Length: 128
Ligand SMILES: [Zn+2]
Image (cartoon, rainbow, N blue to C red):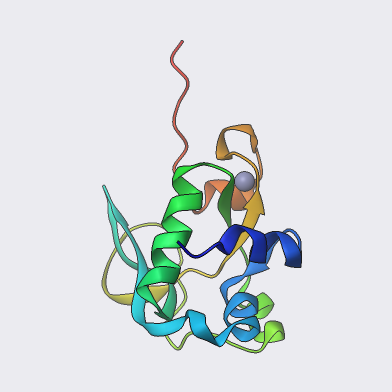
């Protein structure tokens, strides 16, 4: 399994997909990482990825060692890569692919109160 976590750690907090793929061309492929769930679909986080890259990202998200924050598309432009899709305005069903620019943030989503977190991550509510 590809160790994407050490690549993220090496670059520090708030790493973009662009930084990762510019640093390592072997991550490129023909797959897309898409957010789909109850009430939202066709939200693309990144495109042109290898399936190994997608599996590695899924794994560290499930393990809850990193999570996503929403970030302005400008963050990606400054890193030198962006997707050509229209930008996501909110989590909803889109007929055509829309891009949600995100960064990787260290730590569990349960311990984070950032509003950039809530835009993209569905929090599990604590049982009373
Ligand atoms: Zn967060």
